[in-house]
Each structure stands twice: as structure tokens, then as C-alpha cells.
Image 1 (tube, rainbow, N blue to C red):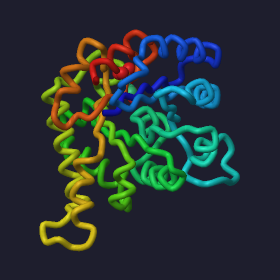
Image 2 (image 1 turned 90 degrees about the vertical axis):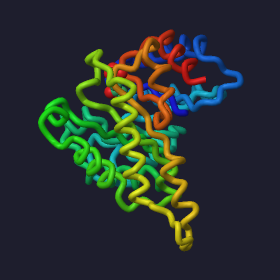
Image 3 (image 1 turned 135 degrees about the vertical axis):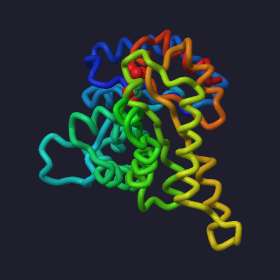
Image 4 (image 1 turned 135 degrees about the horizontal axis):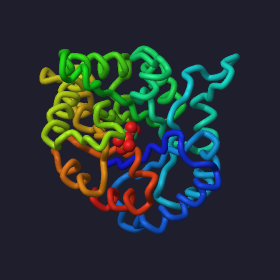
Length: 261
Ligand code: 13P
């Protein structure tokens, strides 16, 4: 299981320090069998990794550029994130796709760069309300997964978490029903199997490849709260959650973590 908090563009450095202190009081530190990640703003990342270095919490960024370095004013590379001990990075969040023009192709370049720098990408996919109601939204998700993860081999894919975040459920209080989420998670796992079918015929690397789709963590995101976390996490193809609003409330995030234990 992976429980991740996306803090979005909230919290100053001082507020981050206070929130981390509160979180450490809410999150059990012993016998924790799940991975827990917080993703604060860029300006707070170094302080977060310093503060959490001897804890079970890990730190992720919310975005990065795909180039190693260069004249890309305002951008931050995977190597820079790794240098301050970030372990994860959220890629292709719907807010980045919607407001900053990120395409599957861009997300794919970032996913390759992240893995090359030993960062674990959390790659987001999901349909808008219009797509769910009027289009073949399953095909859209299929394409998002295939194109965002194109060219990654089985070992690389095993480092990725995919987050299914239906856009209509983000920050709206409208959570997908556990059955609706499970249906799409199952579909995403099928797509991953399709990408790395492994081999019933036993060709080289086949056994490893076939286990990738089972190994990869598929997270649900969109109005996850303590009240709905347990039921969501009980679905067979849901391996964690990516939490927005509730991750800014230490007690709520702590409850969500406990729901996964
Ligand atoms: P909310 O939990 O606030 O709906 O946000 C979900 C999200 O976008 C996490 O990345």
C-alpha cells in the first residue's frame, strides 16, 4: 500500500514545519506496513526531507522537468529533487494537464527522467466529467496509461505508481463509488498487462514481465476522507490513495493511514 498526500499549492515553510510536527504525532511510527509519502511545495521540500529523515515518512515533489539541466527558467530537474532526498514525484496531475498543458507525451518524458534519477513517479490519469458522460472515457484512460508509460521496461515500470484520479471527484466532495473506482483500477491493471504481457510461452524475461502488472501500485485519488478510505482501500485493485484536501489535516491524514494498516 502507498498512502500519499498531495499538498498542492498550500502551506508556507513555517506552516509546513508545523504540519509535519502534527503529522508525526498522528501517524504511528512502529509496525507500519504501508509506505507514506507527503508532497509539499518546492520551497518546503528540503526542510521536509531533513525533518523526516529518521522517520517512516517519505517526501515527494509535485512536478519536475524532464531535462537533466539547461536553460529552462523556472524549472526543477529530477536530479535536483534526488539531491535533497526526495524519493517520489507526482507526474501528470490533472491540474497540470488542465492548467499547464501537460500531455501524455510530456508526462512520459518526465517518467523516464524520474526513473533515471531513481525517483519513483506517481503518474496520474483520469477522465473529466464531460469525458465520463459523453465520450469513451475508458478508451481515454487506456490511452493515458499507454502513452504516459510508453517505453518503460518491466523493471522500470515496477518503480511506478499509477494514480487514478477522476477529475470530477477532485476537490468536489464527489468521491467515485468503490465499485466505480475498482472497475477503472482493474482496467488500468489490464492495460499494464497488455503493455507487458509476460509470457505463457516462457520467452526471456517473461516471468518477470507478467508480474509487473500485479506488482505496480494503483492509487485512487479524489475526495478521499477518513470516512470513505477503508472501503476504497478494500477493493482488490486499489493499492493506496493519493489524498489532496484531507492530507492538510493531520488528524484526517493519520486516520487514512490507519485505514490502510
Ligand atoms: P482531493 O482529495 O482534495 O479531492 O484532491 C485529490 C487530488 O487531486 C490528489 O492529487
